[in-house]
Image: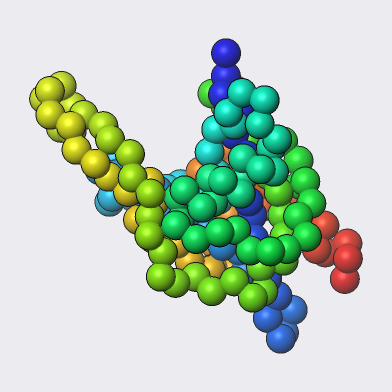
Length: 158
């Protein structure tokens, strides 16, 4: 059965109406030298019976070491990856959220492959605000439709 994750897509507008999105570069040795397609919204798998927004906020804290901003979250939609994985994305205005001083969560994995040795790696290794169009180019392909949907909604609101 394909997994179901939930995540938070924060955006902010500058004084000229330009939109930025907050994204994180995935950690670990596989992603270390990659940029395009190696970024993501803070997200993670739902636990059995867990509310999707609660899961998204929990994962935000686990990955970045800081709580998700106190904001009005709206469900942007559920988006499917080609693998069948589904991600429910919540969106909020993150204008007051500073992208600094994170304590990234860690995971363990066997590295190098088939070595029998395991090591700990950060879930994400950096996080930052970037223009919405640039963020869309850099995130994993399965999340790009969420960025398109956000751009569409913001355009309609203007």
